[in-house]
Length: 305
Image (cartoon, rainbow, N blue to C red):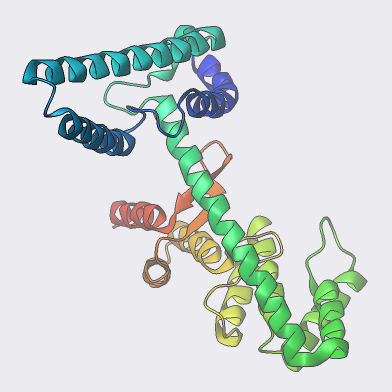
């Protein structure tokens, strides 16, 4: 049963999106009853239309006739809703969702898998929207570097940042020396540039990805002491500071460094409700808000005391 449940996660993830798409296609912008907000809006529009109609026909229509008109309107709305529900039911049946419902229900008292997946997709959508904003900010900051240093110096800055970037896979001693020399030149010659902050952040994130907590901590501390920016976006669109703070806080708790972990939790609390991606229990990347992460870290800290 567990294997079946796990195997269904990927297919139902796609199915949720398909059903949402179907729902949007079935319901035109003015259709009533789609959601609570839409229903309130449609109810207001229907009431306004009904009142206007009554006002225009007040001289000729009786109260009974107006009541019948309202009943007819309600009947038409109910019929429209029934047609939409029937279409969605056919889509659910064709997808096989009915047969899988027992597997997706979850243990008593817990949220269903579909609900959990829906929440994850909503968080992911928020993350993608946030990443778009961060990418636009990064583009603006690169332009700021260009204006601040001039075209020739900006090209030199870019060359150094490219050489200083972490390399995928194993690197030779000569490659490591070249990378570190380029990073040192960036820090010495362009300490306040956006490119230098991004390069430092990428070094820290690469160390974290490779489970090198010592180097991740070293680069993170260098980033804090050098960078004039509160929000640093890597070339991959990662919001570097809260991502690094989350990684290091978890590492500190694992190593028993409770006070250091508390310091980072407090720093995370100042980040607002930003969003990051981190692996879940199954190693799959999921989008989480900083507030959720802080709650988990505080709970874990409480169990260790």
